Image (cartoon, rainbow, N blue to C red; front, side, top):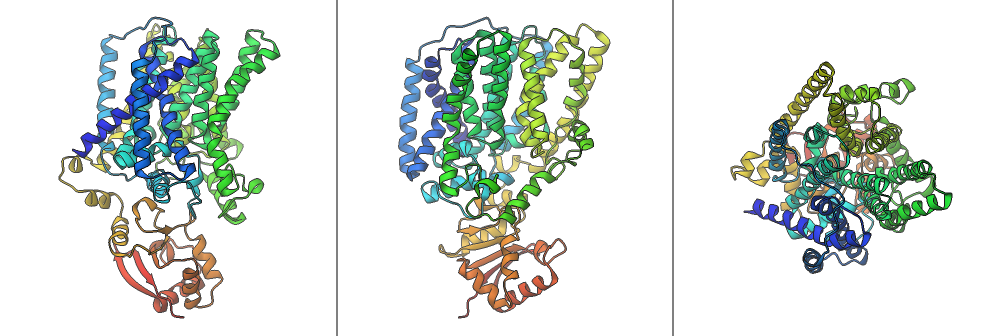
Length: 622
């Protein structure tokens, strides 16, 4: 019953979001070609309204369930009014429904994979980043009733646009509804790709293939059923690009305004979206040069885009500045500094970011497309994800094409420049997802242009099919690893499911069920899964032994260690011994001896889990 309620709530949120966005889209006075396109843009704009409603509650310190329910009620009424009173926008062109048997076959395969993804959505949260901050931070904000400095968790001060929606979801129904929201963003991307390809690229066939290519990218599928924000930022970036293309084609300033709004929403969701305004700047200048506009006209267009982008994107950065002293926390520490950080932590974090990928020498960058397509691995410094070979083996065919329509040129240039930006920053495949919808549409365009060349088309089709087989294998492996059917059927409870997926879960459960409410737990190498801990806890982000090493370096005895931990307010210590005194430890032999002395004389063992996890009560002897 709970799962059905989550699906109903997800549908209700979509309904309200569309209703809230309809009047905004009408005000922008943009000519949509179909009700679907109108609904798509309305949905994105309405989500922005819901997210900022929660944001301002958090700024005011009013994140209380009763108040959130009240604001939701107001938004629901306004959304219904938007449906009832929103004026229809005049259509701008015909739709081209697809009835090809091949398209129907692809739709069927895509539907099958979407069902697999939805089944995974309807399970408790187990995603690493969700447990660290996508869900953990909303949980803490609800507990603190608003924004405040969350010690230790640097991710808590990233842009939190999507997390504001997760706050709402957790109050309305819980973590599964939050996961449903991210899955809804996936569906919105697919619908947007279909609308764009069907209505705005002349002669484009095989659009369903583009959707299948995108969704079966292993990294896309794996995050689609998690409460992450990668597909939320992808949706906003794609809609900004979509609106920009519509402005370029129609000259309607309203589309440029809408593009700026979605760029702002993208920037409020993830730092990686900061590249979007620079892409828009280049696009606007290119458009002005092509139509021989004056510099005043070009400047006016820039302002039409930039004002809504800055107005919507900046609040989270201003919030960060006020709370941490750094609008881009924890980055640019050398310029802004940042509360709770020191130069060494900042240096280590920068080193971690630059360690992702397979090298940064010129030769590494030259072979980067090959490496990211062939050598990438999940949960590994090698790009931390799997892209697959589909783009590598098909996109080169686009080089030989001539007379490419402007819409596709914009998609290609956007993808190329964004890839270069990604190559010069954190090389993590999840950060590359925003270029995959445009590239998937380019694949369908390449197939469309080559279908009259029988041999070339056969080669292309074989390459796409083989690549989809590669992706499907990894998607099915992901599904089998999680095995959601037992818990959905009621044959496995939440504790058993999460315990099966997360080895340390029983330790967190012990903390929640046995420790007093005023306990404060120091977590060391427990993966920073703050969402699983119902007691106040602290853990260093990324480098989980940083605080412990500092304490040990300043101590001469076990008692000094105990006093230092107590001075920080810790009452309990929980750690993974494999990383503290075991084979994977980075502690010196002296530090290990000091730590053992502390445990022997100043800590009481409460629980041992799976032979490697330990929970101690810190004893204090004045």
